[in-house]
Length: 633
Ligand SMILES: Nc1ncnc2c1ncn2[C@@H]1O[C@H](COP(=O)(O)OP(=O)(O)OP(=O)(O)O)[C@@H](O)[C@H]1O
Image (cartoon, rainbow, N blue to C red; front, side, top):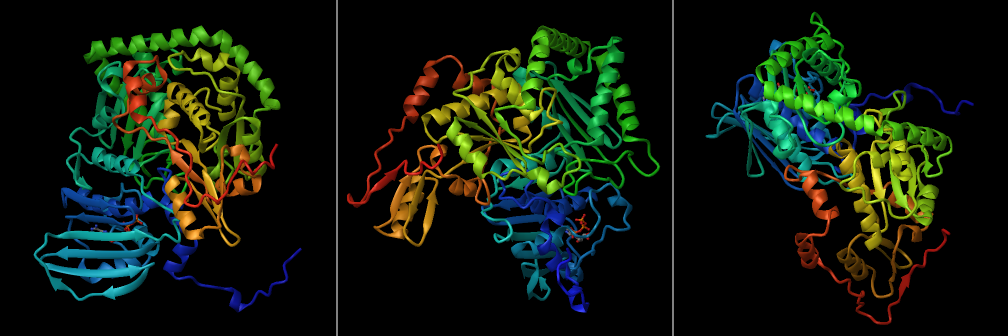
């Protein structure tokens, strides 16, 4: 039935650039998010500005970039040529304005649309650009894209270059915060892809002499490398490879300096080419999965006018390296066939170590093949009516679904009937699924992959996620551990993390694992309700709402009513990502927390022991309502 709305001249609107960006920010910078995911929009804002400084560097101007990022403010200063003073305002506030359209030098850049800084400007509550050129400088300041101040050109003694300062609009990026580890990763990637460039980030120098070799050096600790990192460089292609002791495959792929978190045609070509080259080198048809098991590799290519599968540019779709160039598949394959083959001939120790790793993977695969077959049959049967899984409608690996919906998909892993009941009732069935565990999962520390098949819950979980043979087919963007905030809940959380870190580290490293933060207290009076995640927040809330406030302590997820729970997994969801930083070695980490009891761990526990005090209230007459929410059976 047609809606009864008149279609007249008044219905036709033209938006100016600023309005359009603010109306459809996702089109320009991807996910809005609060900064808890590596690809959230606030990091894209940072990237858009740094990319321009990098472009100057690549053209041969400026060897240093200074970056300062605090909670809500970003400052980026480069020492390039500086935007021509008369065009400073246009460059940041007039759509499709830029100096890169007909320059051959930028052919292999990620975007030449002349939108980057305009998007940042329109989506910032404060934006300032300053250009320095030959003793003169020009400043312009904006608020949400509206020019506040257009200052006259002045004399300066500062070096040539451009400075951009901005604060993301907190009305667009709700509750955002920059996560330092994400910024560090992002900035390291710039350093790795631009050897010779120095980035000063919040007082620390980021510099890489050896590109992708340094990247792998940062990602895999030395003791677990099976052979020294192989580093191969060619025209418009660079590759670094090693094998480790961990399960799964781990890749870092780049196109024209852009980190393609979801891979794409270049990565697919690499995975195929490494198998082919290795088989030819050893003259034996090893199983592809045995060759790739435990590989950690990075590939960076430059292609002309890259095509991406999603607008966030995280997955390459280009079939060829340029309009007249070979296909990416041929390009990558030819390169590896020559260079890797050559390298292995010259380094027999590496070749031997590689062979050993492949044979070990083959052996391990064969050892579990019997149980695997049985377990898969069981899982298939169970999946038809998997009692543990309450699935959602959209999936992350569904090519037909909208990007926004796919990005929203998440699987909550919960324990116990009441918690999973609460989540199941209040979730968004479109994108949120629930997997419920019965009791504590097994501590799988130190076990082999066999246990993932033998243990029914582990097996059903890997099938629910569809990660048995790698994470390409992962069915949810986020895997969210949702356990009670008590000692048992923490223990379960550690046990689930151990499962992922031990058997699916690539999933963790790719930023898919999260913890759900739920409030510990509710403080309310007749007019207002405040949810508190910490004791400090509780005290502040009591202060604000006055003496008559009612205070409820949520002991477990199951005690929060579905109506209330809806908020905590909906608009107000708080997710804490599990991030592995440079210093974390998975093996050491698991050994310390999950391995045999050691004096070290005992001391750690004693040092960190906190005795939970009974909550003391200023007013003894105030009542605490505990476990009041019992609507969910
Ligand atoms: N740091 C800088 N140094 C020199 N010129 C710059 C700098 N930042 C921006 N510019 C100029 O401003 C123009 C507009 O930048 P903007 O980021 O909006 O678009 P773009 O880089 O051309 O394309 P894209 O949409 O891919 O980002 C650039 O083309 C360049 O001429």
